[in-house]
Amino acid sequence: MQLSVPIAAGAKEKSLETADFESVVREHQRRIYRFLFATLRDSDAASTLTQECFLRAFKNWNSFRGDSSTVTWLTKIAVNLARDHRRDRKLTFWRQLFRPESEEDVATVAEAAVEPRANPERAVIAKDQASVVWDVVNELPTQQREIFILRFAEEMSIAEIAEAMSLQEGTVKTHLFRALASVRKMAALESKSR
Amino acid sequence: MDKTLEHLNDDQWQAWLAKDFEDATDAHLSSCAECRQEGVRLRSLLAGFQNVVQDEAAREEAFWTRQRASIVERAMQKRTAINFAKALPFVAALALLVFAVELPKQSVNPPQTTQSNDDKDEALLRQIQGDAYREVPSALAPAGLVTEERERAIKFKKK
Image 1: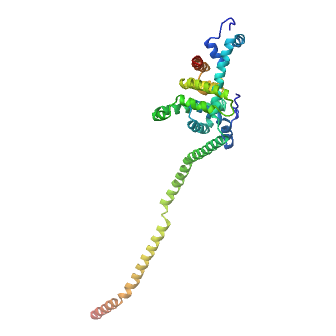
Image 2: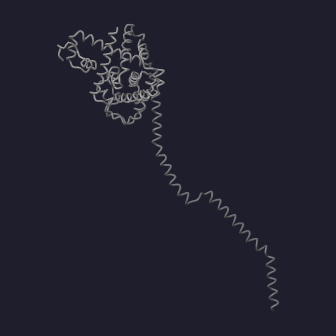
Image 3: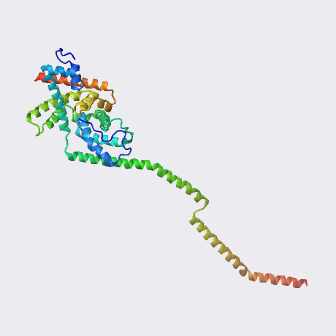
């Protein structure tokens, strides 16, 4: 997936006009929402944090130096928001009590993936794959989970992920390899159990 | 990578899946049916994950339009608040400056309304005093005549 840079580095205006800002939102809102949704598995939270992400970007637009692309910068904000949200969510135990992150969520997601436009065979395969991968991803440590999603759901490059997460590329690879090892292990167990 | 290796090891699989691999890995995959099958299965697994995320995160255009409008509206409100916050010190400084300039003037020249009232009081007092001075001699005229008569009588006796 080609990453676009709507406002070129160095050529960025200091003051962000409404029309410019709206075009930035239009171009990136789906991607930011998707990342937050994949990370949090909560559409309401993803929607709220997507708005918050752009508002933070708007507020700090003048401090954005343009060293990285706009989408990488926005992803960086989204990663921090998702972490804050998960941290807050851990404190609200009652919420987990009534809405546990379990196979139920995975099943919901998998059911949603079965759409009329998909053929039945693909739908069944997608459901199985989703169940396995989302289960594993959900159990991964925070950084591994975020890196896995950015790599395989958003198709960001290692360099872009490193930039967005303020990590060395080598560290990103290490996390990614570990995450992949977990997914492979679970996938192997899954296929053997059939 | 050595093509004579039986199969890809874990690290090579991870690297291949992360699309961070050497050409030799591809070479092995093209020659090893078992690894190729495993590669297809793993890639399919990851593609399925991506499809599910994308399908589940898909929303109607109205959702994105509403969200965008909300973001822009809140951003503009924030900008207004920020501008007001930025302008507030200047307004306060201006008000302080005006106050500082006007205050000495008021202390040197007492308020006009108070001055006017004092003048009226002063004029009224003078009028009363004037009237009193004018009235007293005429009121005391008989006493003056008595005094004059008495003085005249004393002079007459002396003579």
